[in-house]
Amino acid sequence: MKFLIFEMKTVCYNSYLYFGDSLGKALGLLGHEVEYFKVDEDSLDDLEDYIGQNFDAIIDFNSDLPRALMDDDSFFLDHIDAPFFDIILDHPLYHHDSLKNKLSNFHVICLDSNHKDYILKYYPHIKSVNVTPMTGELAFGQDKIDWEAFDKRPYDILMTGTYTDPTRIEAAIMKLPDFLRDNIKELIDMMMADSSLTIENAVEALARNEIYDYINSDLPLHTQTFYLADTYVRCVNRKNLICALDKCEHKLDLFGGLWDELDLHHATIHREIPFNLTFTVFSKAKICVNIMPNFKAGSHDRVFSAQLNGAVALTDPTTLLRSEYSDMENILFYDLEDIAGVTQIADSALSDVGNLKKIAQNGFEIATNRHTWANIADVIINAVK
Image 1 (cartoon, rainbow, N blue to C red):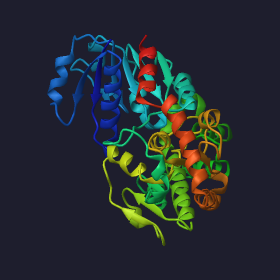
Image 2 (cartoon, helix red, strand yellow):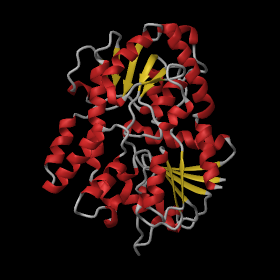
Image 3 (cartoon, rainbow, N blue to C red):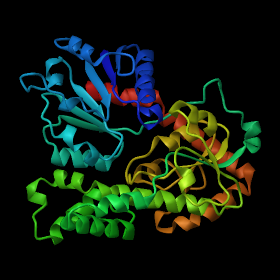
């Protein structure tokens, strides 16, 4: 097969570039031909060179390409003879402006089976939707995990990512029209009261209780409009998680932007690093902490990246993770309904490093067998077939 991979964005610590390169490498190792368009290396004018070309599949991540139009208002992607696969790394609500466009051969790969259901329900022109989480790899320069040195890893508890103060989101909400602000506050209350509630289910519940008929008037558009509710809940949960971990008896290290805006007492804050270097710090951690971006049936790549580098993943659970992992055997779960309890979970696990290493080894085995770039490449190939 012949693949064209677009790398159109350099945001999120260059994670999109890493994902594109890693998927391309995995496809190449399976014997497929891979061509890249990299926005940081190629000129946007060169996109026209692909018009009329043939590929077995075109791939992009969180793509804006479905919105690209020719001079006659036809879709740019319809002028390339290939199915287009958009790999969506967030909830689909954040990509409504791309997903709504009726390309002739539009397909989606997403991270969560709830997201798949949402896309199939509200975007019937999309021809197929498949699910696979993203992943990472063993840190550069290492060929295996040194399990004998596990107890000497310098980071007891590690978290990577960016902090966003919830008050920033509150300020944005307060600038909205009254009716929209009130609806968003109601959604926030629902989601904070029930951590299992997805944003789409919350919006559907809101629609049933409102005079305005959201459901029959383009619910995906309204769900997009309510994105600040989802964002706010994510920010509050992340803040509460780190504040609870800051109370641990063991060391907490944070890598990423704006953590100094949070009033922490014991954590050590490190500078931001490119995405591919996070694997190096994971390889130096005993526990790597994850919090889902409100995913309930998928996973964030931090979980598998941590495990592939010999660390124990400490995360809120999803139906996917519960189907593959067992708490205290190959992973550590905390409950969003009791985030404060994560303090005891982390301290208790670190009090027995020998057992913690066994959990790490068991998690490593599962991630190695089920969550590598070869596994993701297989999902893509089967989707194309």
